[in-house]
Image (tube, rainbow, N blue to C red; front, side):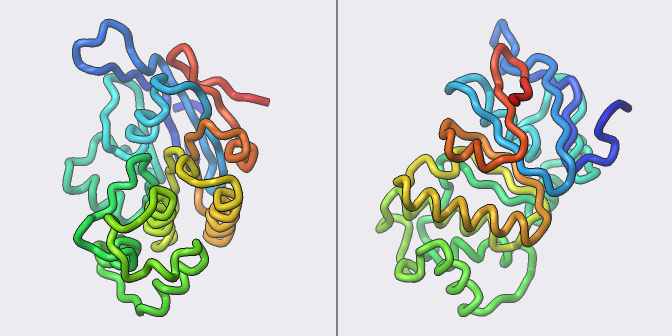
Length: 226
């Protein structure tokens, strides 16, 4: 085994192709992130940035190469075990939010706690939502939210259980500049408080500049940026 034996996130020579595709989407991608690192991946649409996050989360499986996250070889887990692993260790901000329409904002945000069998109070959830500017929407349902509010709920849900690893796919894509800055401040605050590792996929330079390490995904590989 090469570099990254004790890393929080290890991808070594990872290959991924969509079924029927003549060319790989990812062709020998390697990435090593130490615990507590904050990194960003930039690049144009369609190059595989979201797929990279899905591979780390165990939502997609590589054709070849190794994926090891927080000491676990995620692709080797069965579907149920992978779901339990994600619930315990991972916070994921999806680009499409994936809020449950029949749950209120507070219930959506608290979902990781419920799935992990952890107890909480309404006050704790309310305080968490307040720090993301969502106190007034706690009892609302996703269908009554703006896109920016829904995105903040998705971020609240990803952070509430203080995960060891945060994956965020365009975390400020639906937010105006002022709100994006405030949300990024909160996100980075939680990362610092918990010592979490964070990987952000973004088109936004103001998001990428918050990361200590930056990579560009192009020509099917990751390239470290200065």
